[in-house]
Structure formats: structure tokens, C-alpha cells
Length: 151
Image (cartoon, rainbow, N blue to C red; front, side, top):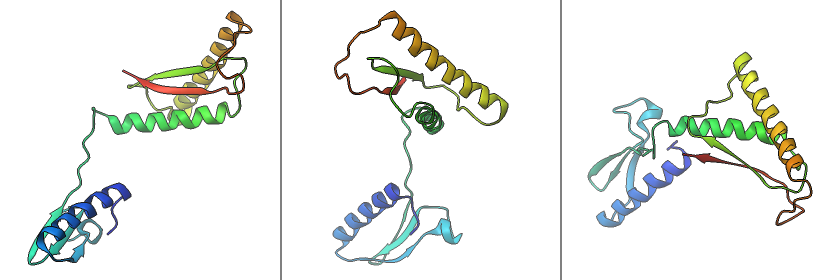
């Protein structure tokens, strides 16, 4: 059974409940999508004399949630690359990314987005530091750039 980890665990948990109720173990386990046989479900299995087809469906909390997560991962990777060490000054920085923020992308447009974001962060950190020199934060030994989704 080649089902992504969490989906596979979920399908297995359902099958174990069916096995417990039937008092017998599963047989004839088949991954139709992998074999290209029958309807494209995640798993077909027989428990006792009853056949079951399981399809794990993702319920997304909002439209384009998967694309938003990909954008977040791409931007996170850029931030980690650009700012691997502490940012200057005694401050704690947060950047809020709106849900509709586009992925940095590739090519010229992607490069302009990445360069623009990096330049804006650097300039903003410098400007904030200049406005409040010497301001102490809770822990003077930890400097972070934190990012969160805003709605």
C-alpha cells in the first residue's frame, strides 16, 4: 500500500476498526491507483467476506490552502537563506504574510519578487533599529525573524 504517511495511517485505523467489528483480519489488500485497476480509490481490502474501498479525502479549511502552504514554504526557504543568523539590534521581528501572497516563482518575475522582499526586510529592520536604538527585548541573546499568515 503506497499511500502518503498520514493518509495511510488513517486508512489503517479505519480498517482496524472494521476488523475488530468483524472479528477477522483483512485480506486481499490492493492499491488500485498504483496498479491502475478499478476505480481510483486509495485502498481496496477484504475483511471477512465483505469488500471495502477506502478513499481518504482532504478537507481544506479554505480555498487555495494547498497553494498558500506552498507559497509559505517557498518564502520560508528564502528567509532562512537570506537571514541565516541574527538580525541586527536588540529586537524581535515578525513578518505577516497575507493569505493571497504569490509564490516567489522562477525567472525574472520571481527574482524581482525575491529581491524586493529581501530589500524591504533589510531596509525595514534598519529603519526600525534607527527609530529605537538601544531598546531591549525580553531575551537579549535571541534574534528571530518570525512569519505568520494574517487573514
